[in-house]
Image (cartoon, rainbow, N blue to C red; front, side, top):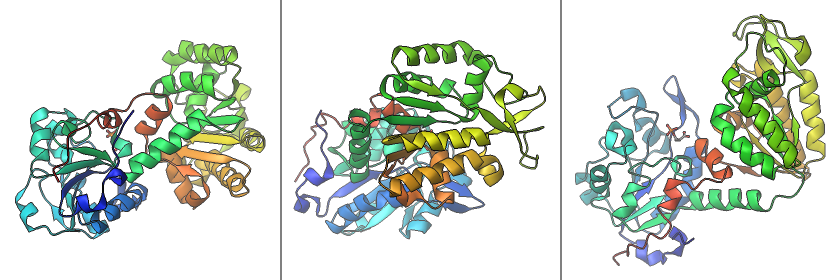
Length: 398
Ligand code: 3PG
């Protein structure tokens, strides 16, 4: 597989070049404030590299899912302000290009205000490419989408991978191909259905697979336990049982929640009661993994050499009371990583938010910017945004 990287270019080749840079700035915004700037911060090395080498850098990105229509709440102006760079109010605007100097950086308005972006329309990709000398994809987190600015655009411009994209591919490939064993994978989150293929791949790779959160509830239901009035997927019963069989065939040890934190309604105000999984009542609502499960997970970490974590074990956005299982787990993971006992990899927006809240991001060996892209990559899929860069041989006009 050949994929040109920006570091393959001679630095003088970038001087004065108009670079269209695709980043993923799909960040969390609450009450008009960016609450998690992780993805923006991770884009900085590539921006600086291009800037310092005299390119004229035009960043394009998306925010949310505006479905082809302008929506002022999803404007990227807030990101331009955060980065302190000029903002262009229409992503297909070109006039400003003439005024750019070497080393300038600007951000374009949300690409998804045009429906040609998500529909990967050729005409939109072509218009977007006009006025540029080359294209750089640094948006790993959006590279699982077949969008005009991610894959279609590479038909029109010499295309290169940015530093973040390369870093994500190298780190995740390395961990999936050469993990130090035992490899333990902890998967949480809401739905088995969205992670079915991931689970099927993981049982063939991991030494131990720990399934928690609402996914764990679905597995416990499939195993015959009462799950009360909780969030789970009854339709996934057979799939869950198939995964249990596959794990056995592949010598992958499976672990499920032993107990749960429950209330009587899906509300953060409920009093948290700890109940064993064989003691759940019909009117119980499960909102976190329980105390015995937390201790069991901490014990499991003691014997691990590599740990991958994706997806929370409870309602982490409600804080410590219902996020306890995730917060405790993350802290132990960070501690063992600091002590060089394990190599840790975390991906997925909710898990990364937990690291943020606990202020332990810096302790984890590798934190991916990807949510869906992280999952698709580790389940072995070819991401369209990466695929489009492979074998792109359009010559750069020097
Ligand atoms: C993400 O946040 O995972 C990416 O930016 C992709 O967003 P999407 O799921 O709206 O396509």
